[in-house]
Image (cartoon, rainbow, N blue to C red; front, side):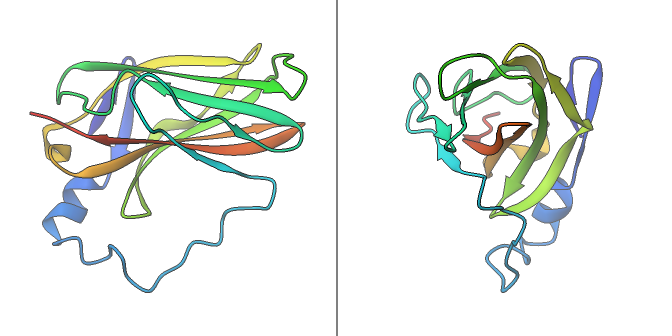
Length: 155
């Protein structure tokens, strides 16, 4: 299980790892991305390229790309209109491995108020050494964005 302060993430990481990652890179394709959703991938721990549709600007910042199993790891999500005004909406927090969702927050969706959501979580020992993607899917009335933050959990 992936634990967060006062929350528990449902995680299938151990199952995927135990199954030899048989589902990774298979023939299944995801069709859940819509044309209003864009993806941004972090290039370093200190800066992330923002995802933007014609109506929103969203960013995801993680503490680093190498969280330590069993220790708190902080992250934040920010979303504004193209003009810079903060937006409210929701953010779904999930984890992917090889493009497959292997865990979600419980509850999976959180409120974004005045353009921000901040939290901490703890990665489990079962996630050590596996290239996961911490994913925040932001929804507002002005548009949506999917933000990715690659992590490899350290012991």
